[in-house]
Length: 194
Image: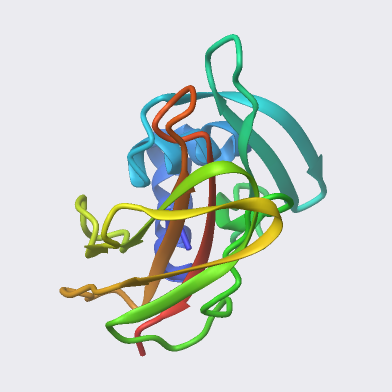
């Protein structure tokens, strides 16, 4: 999903790292998770690691915003991309508990307009959905703000139109917030355009 679109890109970074020490943060799952959240998704207020579990070639890193009422916004799932000792960390999704994005299915082929959905537990939630690609700073599309949701493990559904997809893999991100910060929880999935 991010930051490398292909194995060849990850291997090119490995060569650059070995020769010049370029972008060492790719070897740190915590920094990769925060870069994904703050840089790629644009959730600047989420600025700290709240949990860390690394087991072999997989990592699960919780991220949160700083504040007295801050809970974990998401647990980012990462894997080592490649086989060498310098294989970088790659974000592959989120581990979801009280907020999920199950439609469309992970890895499915999509086109616009896109129906999204999942399940949520919470009170007075406002869900916003964005479609992103690694080669663009701005979202390719954003759902009309915002889809109301709440209750205990209740379904939610939103539609989003997008355009300008060039990358073969897109990221769909659903977020909710507004009680103590703009983004309090989020969930992501990866889909294909071809």
